[in-house]
Image (cartoon, rainbow, N blue to C red; front, side):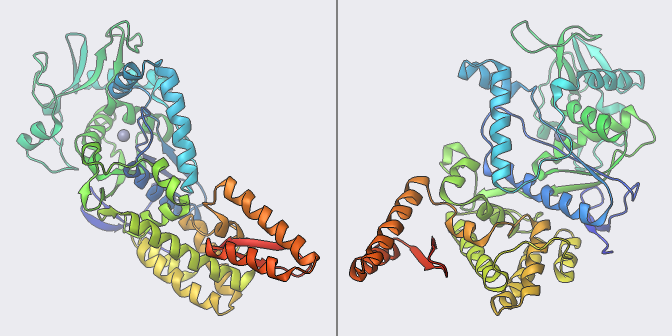
Length: 454
Ligand SMILES: [Zn+2]
């Protein structure tokens, strides 16, 4: 079995991955806050950790992958107010859109998707533990985490105390004992979501939500915690402080894995720069598999620069892969074929997807020359990368809207009729007219005609 190596943000080193229980690997990834459509930056961790989960499932007998849904958050409250929409309607509508978008990108659902609204009991229990252990205090209806009480605070982000206070952008509220202290629980007004607690009706802060959801589903100590590098501080730092503060002697997550930023045209994506794209915007331009390939062509730790040219490039690359599959195997999916060693080795080396993809291209060249074994290997590699699982014929029709597809079928029928009455001039004219629009016809033995994008 291949040995997996991962870069651990906690040690800043690439380390051999050794699970706590080799019979059951446990991973937690910070999930979406459901108040708006997912943007392409949100898609990156979903696809990266989908590949990691698929790889872990190849390597270990059992994997539990937990990705939370943050459905209690001040951004949600603000968006619901701005849309004049009930909070529950906003969060369930947004969650459904998220599920659709991530499925379009080929991401499998995690094993468990806990929601904050279903985890209030564990959140309150965790805060009570923190108070009992001297790491939290009640002030003015709030419960705050006492940062100075945790001597090892800051291990993950390694920032100075001043940097931490500035970076956290926390309010310097009068009820705080220390400016770095952060909110675990805050009071709610009657118009906002709230739950009864020992500290009055209120709602949790964001950081404690992830500590509670990972604890509930994976226990106080588990193998891998993932998320975007932008979450390292303060979110992940605070998760560590809360979870190890509530359960002294435990280490919370053993391996911290962070994916890099996503930029657009070399700039930070922002609505004001006009370079802000949702996953839905991209899916209008190309199949989800092409976007997934864009995300995997850059190593997960590196910054990724999205451009429309890169999306076109990825689509053309998938055309080459699917042409190779078609040439070698006619597109059948063979089960139980092992992932080719060179691809597996690349993925086990800190999820080196760019190297794995270049090895997939080598297999593609062999498949194009008719090597059916290479094509089967490409399919098997694709099960870990989440690529190349379609029938090539479907891929070559992908991204064609229903109206155009119907028009093409009509043209094929008209051509068939022309040939039947031996009007070959008209039949050729129809074929040429479609070719001019990038649609290629193929006459199959037996008389059927199929079409594909050129
Ligand atoms: Zn989180």
